[in-house]
Image 1 (cartoon, rainbow, N blue to C red):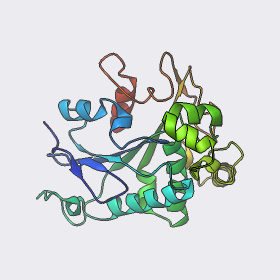
Image 2: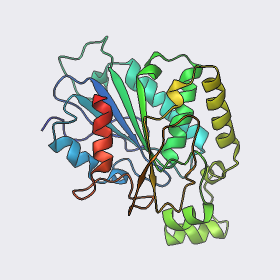
Image 3: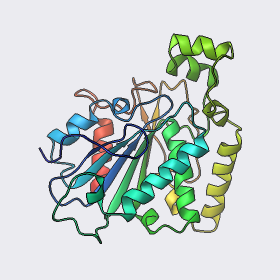
Image 4: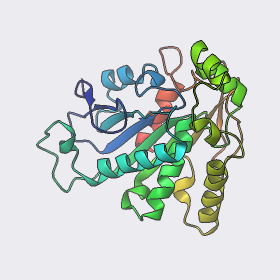
Length: 265
């Protein structure tokens, strides 16, 4: 084992960390999507990380947030606050004392892995970091699975992502999920996200808006597979639907290998 057992930290909701027992050089943060969970969204990622040596010099964080009740802008602000806390303070403050971590410690790189709505939340959080001139922004890489930065196919999202009871109550207007307004293709937050990203790119100040890797499902029925900004050509994965595309297992190792590759690129 190269990491601690899971440690819950006071960031977001049910956020779970696995700290490297050796000197960490990288911080890897996983950010789930609509109605996702900090750990469950990511399949066997936690087991693979702890059982293999590829992540031995990385601190791992599975970030959780209330993706149903909170508007996307609020989730982005909360994620931005978490990123600032984690990168601007000693990780010894998170609940485990490592003698080789000094007060001046800084991660060499930050790998941000997001699924679905998590990609929208993440991109907006990084724009906030740019606004505030955060030094750690230059150390970030994004890997985005089935990103929702162009919105959702709303009917499919509701039927695929909510329980039967939640779907019925939502249809009757008895419960509401504010984030659904943000996930419409022409929503205010999506239009502003694209506008602000392109404006920075035009000024040669937007390299941080360019993802390291985009992964689309060939069977996608929930998000809109459309190009964003200056992102690279997406990797198109077959036989994996929206919710499965980010979940590695013994027969599907693409997500795991992509994240490992980013650690050493």
